[in-house]
Image (cartoon, rainbow, N blue to C red):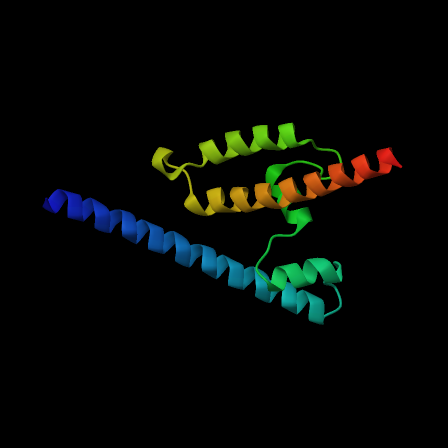
Length: 127
């Protein structure tokens, strides 16, 4: 029984550490982006700046993480890359929960962008 409790505490501790690490990274990224924007070297669109303020990932960052070009990837290619990258970073296999979270968020962002792009193409074809 005590072994089960010890394992549970260990997993809880690891999850807490991963969450704290992810939060610290988010704060660091936000402050870096804010200081870059104040100096005039920030660049980027209003849309990506507001997404960063909400804690969302930008399309450009998502594409970098997944190593794809958002304008030329297909849902099938995106799903294939996601499965490989997500499985390779499984914490049970010695991977990183933080990286797995970044991959998941990048996948979700790009999936939405690709779906939107394909819907726009389908609408244009009908006209």
